[in-house]
Image 1 (cartoon, rainbow, N blue to C red):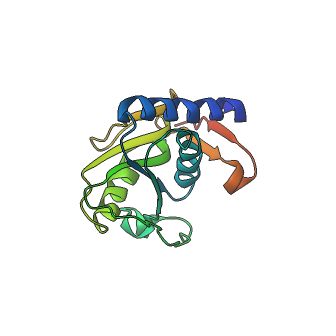
Image 2 (image 1 turned 90 degrees about the vertical axis):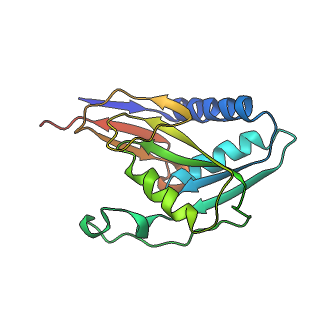
Length: 175
């Protein structure tokens, strides 16, 4: 069985993220830091919606390839790209943004990578899709879409800027 989300459903998820962030941060300065790859595109979309507000917004991109605990087990060679954090992390209110939250290991790696830039005043997590099945105690502060999946399902996110199409496919994998 396969389940698909279309561009409109993805846009609604991004809108929910922006509205929740707007409501909880109350115009205070924030920095959105997207996790490569695709988390950065989600973060940029949220940033564009929040740019309508009268507030200080920063934007950064974090590459966590070298911080992953499964680095040596990746089937393909990861494409190492630079992180781009053009603001002071020290004391900042940072919202990490990713496309899918699954086991939580990516976010753990992102927190390690972010700490190399300084000590934020606060770090929150926004995800376009929360699919459950954590292996570490990490939970999102902001969720655009919650998907019920089985542990072995594959959640394949495609975004316009990265992949040429906005689509999420959940492909069931038999045990």
